Image 1 (cartoon, rainbow, N blue to C red):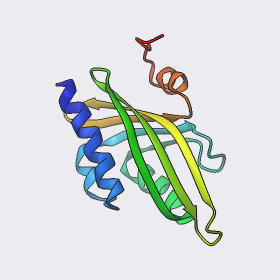
Image 2: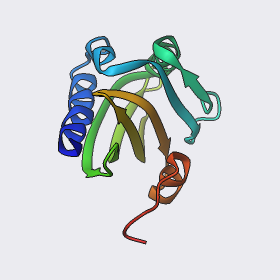
Image 3: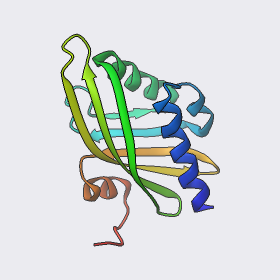
Length: 137
């Protein structure tokens, strides 16, 4: 089942990369916890809840950028969790200034749906946020 979880999470990233912000909700639990509290976004660093919370996060995030491009560098199977390493390059809306992000995200899966997501600048921080132990440590 865990390989299927990795494929599910990567399909969510693929949809977002294509600019499809609606179809991923089919694979996201209605009561998802979307934890951005450890991410370096002072005005958006908090925990969002449910589909409406994610929509609120995305509305704020997308309004700041003219363009968003990202690459999933690596996806690791943690059973009911998937750890993804991401590089993202955004261009500021209005300013045109490019901003690069490198972060890690853990997505928890239950019954074929994402139930929680944690993001942080480091692998150690995101694993801690998700309550996971790093097998590489």
